[in-house]
Length: 250
Image (cartoon, rainbow, N blue to C red; front, top):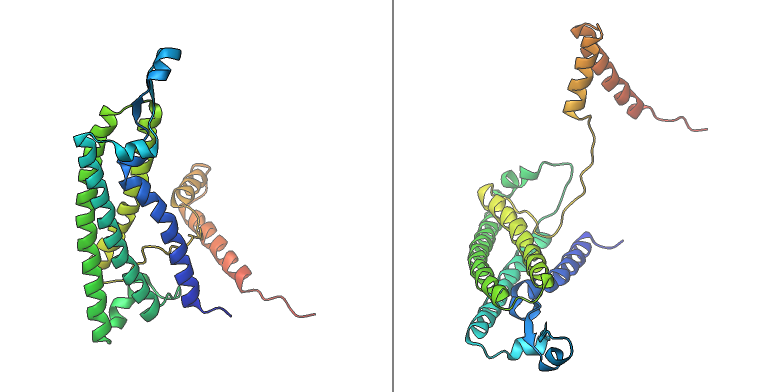
């Protein structure tokens, strides 16, 4: 049987590789956003001298503002890389020293880890470093978006310019939002939430609005309040009894 820690590391590595693509396109906006370039041959044939620049042309663009934005793009990418290294270090430490038990509440670690002072201090230090690095990275990326927005305005070619800018940015912003929530909850509640692993939610009870609507309908039809609650409780007990029934062996 494959060790659970190995499975978790493979999952984290796979998600990380997917996110590298999102971060690269979402930070290096001066390269990957479709921009307008002049072409004299198109002017002679179609009357329009505008076409989409190639990646090489975006990279070799000597315009002063374009170069400034590109340098900030690179700086933003580097801050993302630093933040990712801390995030992966934090995740690796959690996989090595902690585990996931679905039979225990999410906040049970706080009562357990105090018995291990070294682990407790290390967890607090990792969470704090992660949170502070993430906040700095968010600030840098916010400036990156502002600078790139003017570049989009100046080099606008078509609707693809805006759609790429929006999609690339949203992918990164979603990642930052999720990471911020993980970091904030981890620091605030003294816990170790994973930035990569999540679990599916099982719907295991009736919706509150549905139950209230059903009770209201039964009351309007003439059923007494006592009978309404007895009916609801009986249904719940019948479901529990069905779960407890064990089929006899043949």
